[in-house]
Amino acid sequence: MEREQTDKPKETLKNQKQEPKKPKDYSKGKIYGITDVETRETYIGSTITSLSERMSKHKLHSECSSKIIIEKDNYEYYVIEYYPCKTKEQLRQREEWHRKRCQNCVNMVRAFITEDERKQYKAEWFKKRYEISYSYPLQQLFMTEIELIEKDEHKKEMKKQHDNTYRQKHSAKIAEWKANYFQEHKEEIYAYRKQRLEQDEEAKQKNREYQAEWMRNKRATYTDEQRKADSQKAIERNNKNKEAIQARRAEKIVCECGQEITRGSKRLHTQSKRHKEYLENLKST
Ligand SMILES: [Zn+2]
Image (cartoon, rainbow, N blue to C red; front, side):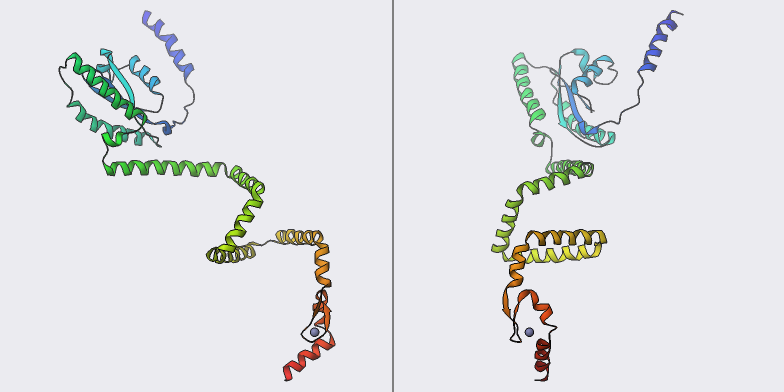
């Protein structure tokens, strides 16, 4: 009866506390160690929470094999490796990878050491631990070259996936940023392009190909709306340069038929009697 009464409020509290589960963030994955300072017995685990949070859980209900170390209360805990990944399984595999290596370390556990030796050992261990935690020299400590490459590739893959999702998520923002950047640095960009095209024959050729390709693509997807917008733009451009255009059209030139005309009347002139006669003569001779 007594027992039931103490149990009941606990149950309700537990029920109240239940919230919808958040998806777990394995990008915060890490492998950690708990090592008995004296015996060097080491427990290896993995977590996605902070290490102090994880440790407080170990202390609270230490039914796992870390118990033997924690109960003696003479231990250090430390991050062996930060291992951002996607799934629990990946993290567990990595933990296992370290655990296998650690069993070798257990062989080095000494039954007895003098106080001086212990100090020396601790200093060395501290140095090692510091290196492991902060500058990632696991490389020298545990990893073979192939494992290093694998680790590198894992990191690259994670970064790539992250970058891709970032790009998808923020594509509008990135486009806006690019457009702004272009507007702000327009003159520099144009000047640079111009200079490059003048100096570099290969760049010139590439640019030609690029423009041709761009035209092809544009034609293939040209809509009436775009066509209207473009001709509107052309009209605006003409208005802006009206005087220069008019001056050019008024320029006097001599046609191949010998008639002096203005540049602007060239098309009309090709329909004239004199010009047509000239062309006919050209054919018959
Ligand atoms: Zn003519």
